[in-house]
Image (cartoon, rainbow, N blue to C red; front, side, top):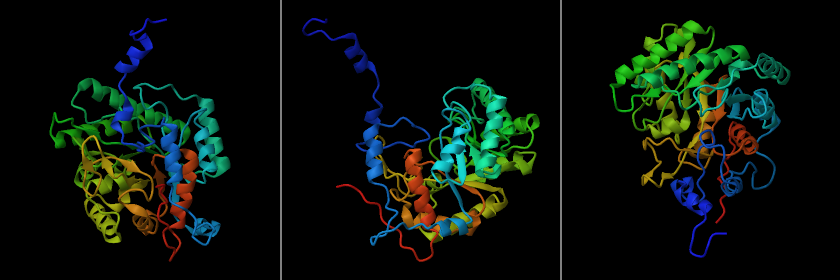
Length: 372
C-alpha cells in the first residue's frame, strides 16, 4: 500500500492520460461515425432530447402508407460487429431502407481480408431482407488521404482504396464513399485534386464495377471537396466517368455556406450543383443536422462556419423544417439517404421514422423536446 502523501502508479497514470472529456462541452456528443464509444449519460441525454414523433393529440406522425408511397430510401450508418452481415440485420431492425457502414477497422491501414463465406452470407442476407446493392454505401476509413503530399501516406491511401474496392466487389456492392482528401497546407489545391483523381484511376484499373463516390466537405482546414468546383475538378480527371459520383452531406453543405434550413437555400444549392457538377453524378445523401458550437474554438456552428460537427435531426441549425424540404425534394428520389448522427442504432429507428413523417403533406413538424 502506498504511504500517506504518496500517489499510486494508477493515480499518476490517470494524471498523464489525456482526457477527451475536456474537449466536449457538458452534454455534447460527437459524431457517432467518428466516436462510436460515447459516455452512457451523454447517450441517455440525447435519447431524452429526441424530436418527438408524436402529435400532441397522440399517435405517430408516420404511417406505413407514407413510407410505402415514399420514393426516399432512408437508412443509417450501422456497425458490422459480429460479422459484416450483421449490418443488414441491424438495418432491418431499425426500419432502414438504406445502409452505411465501414468494411473493416477505420483505425488501421490494413484491415483483415474479407472471408468468402462472410461475403456470401452478406449477399444472402441482403437478398433475404430485400436490400439492393444500390442502396448500400460503404464508407472509407478516415486515415485515407488520396491527396496527401507525404509519399508514404499517399501510397498507403492508394493501396487502401484498392483493397476496399476489392471488398465491395466481393460483397456484390456497386458504390464506395470516400472523403476526397487534404493538401495539409503543403501543396496547391489543383495538385491535390490531380493526386486524388490519380488514386481513383489506379483503383479503377485494378477493380472492376465499383463506383467511387466523393463526399462534399465542410471547407474546414485544408480539406478539399467543400466547393463544388473542386469535386468537378476531380471528376474531370477521372478516366471512367461512369464510375465516379458524389454524396451530398447536409451538415457539410450547411457548414460550407448552403442554407439548407430554407427551401430556397436547398433549391439554390441543387441548382448550383447541377450547373457545376451535374445531377447525373449525385449518388447518395448523408443526413446530418449541423451542431450548435465548437467550444474549444469559440466558434458557432452556424451557416458557413466550415465546422464538420454532426448533430441529431432537429437539434441543429438546419432544423426539422429544413429536413422537411430535404425529404420532399424530388431530386433525392431513388438514392440512399444515410444518417450519420450521434445516436446509437436503436435510436436511429426514431430518426428514420421522424424523417419519413416529414414526407406527409401538410404535417406540422414537432419541435424537439429538451429537458430543462
